[in-house]
Length: 214
Ligand code: DX5
Ligand code: ZN
Image (tube, rainbow, N blue to C red; front, side):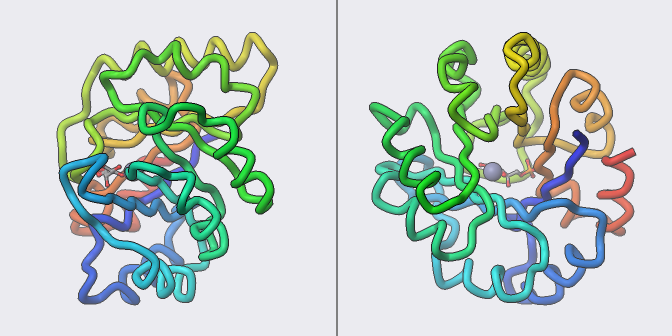
């Protein structure tokens, strides 16, 4: 699959509705929603009051990426707030399974995420228990960082593990994705690319999205 999920973190929050209308018109597949708590990551983004207008004005599925400690406290609220998928970090929890169950019980798709310093092999036991895995290609916390090239081998590794089990689990890549590296990421086995600054910082964001999908 070749899906693009622009990250709303790089949108203009003063004109959020306009940016969401651009996303609605565009070939973007999902809208990626980065929630940061200032504890799991050294940055704070936004929460439910800002997600509400996103739900209201955005016609694309909302792909929620929680960068928070204790995701078990909030995953259900994000499901109720209209998330299409909810992901949290493996390294933020002791046991992801009961948290995945909370999300599944809401009928929402699940995603497990790891930062670049977490061994990709730690995802393997969960590949048949989630709808998607998200490999961070920068350290979670900020948009506009540079893509970490070592991510490429991790994509190939996890692609092989998924294929050899005959699973449908999607691979999402987040951080430093742009029109230059998108094709290589899809070729390595990624299904979904998150792009913040490369979309919202582009002169023609809709064209940037189209380019990444080609
Ligand atoms: C980083 C976030 C990313 C970020 C990507 O912690 O998870 O989704 O918005 O931004 P770019 O595409 O600018 O690297
Ligand atoms: Zn993200």
